[in-house]
Amino acid sequence: MQTHDDIFELVRQKSAEAVRKMQRGLILQPGAIGDCILTLPLAAYMKDALDLGGIDILGHTEYIGFLPGRSCIDGVRSIDSMDLHRLFAKTNTFVLKDRDPLIIAFGDYAWIATFLGEPNSNFEQNLIFTANCSHSAEVITLSMKPPKGFSEHLADFYIRQFIDQSGHSLHSRRFQPEDCLIKATEADINRGKDLLREIRFGSGKKLMVIQPGSGGAKKCWHLENFLAVAKELDSRGVEIIFLLGPAELERYSDAKIKKISSIGRCLTDLSLTQVLGLLSCVDGFIGNDSGITHLAAALGIRTYGVFGPTNPAVYKSIGPAVTVFASSTASFAKKPSIRLQRKFLEVVTA
Image (cartoon, rainbow, N blue to C red; front, side, top):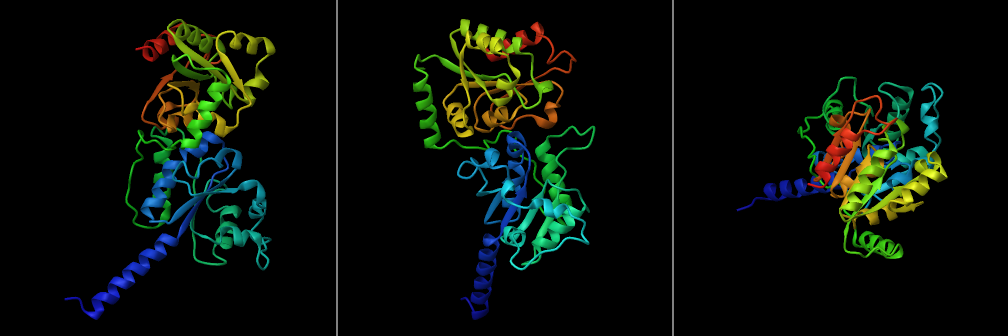
């Protein structure tokens, strides 16, 4: 038989649980698409380990705007709409006003993990001061890049940093490299189907998307490698779509783009949600160490990534069907590699 004390204790526990569920977390991530996607295991860990009711990400909206409703992220905030530069001021000159926009911006969060600033920097101290003006909040500054010689995955590095700096007895957990971090919605799939209808794709063939570019030119496998792979796949009945983003359109001459278009359909100037929709309707993706490669992998698509100067052990895309090809040669981006082309095709066509 329950006593009054038992009932009060149960109510207290339920109330404490409700309060925890109302707490929210925030991640400040100023990076590009790939950086944001590789941060998702940390976001999922924070949400679970801290029993948070939600977690938001503050970054560039063109890179993070698609995450709510498709990932563990519940909301996004625009880094460009906030005066975060104020937080870099010397602590003895940093001033907050009544109802300051910075206080309001961080007022909803019990936990804040930031990839901006350095430990014990002016930014960190000013952020701690700002976040605690309205309530008690924990602020943890994380390093975006692991130390030299680090050989584990970046997602584990982020989670371990968070645990070590939290000051709490949080359970340790490695991220699951086979997780689908992003789930396409029905609207995404329909958008992809509409796009394929627009370019009159309906042959019933296997469809592969190739993105030959990346934000960093040194990370791009020589274009002739992708063209040779595309030609061979086409000869085996695989339909090829080349995806060219702003970086490729800027780097490639008209002659190169014409050559690409002679081998497969070429899609340019797609929005990120259009790319997501397209990827949700294809059989496979081929690319460099790039944001779109990370997106394809996170969606669970069969993804083939080619890594040159970056270490795949650290930066490998996360997903259930990811195959990585690595080349440490100095000629990775400078000239074709017949050997790696053959190795690549052996796996892709197996």
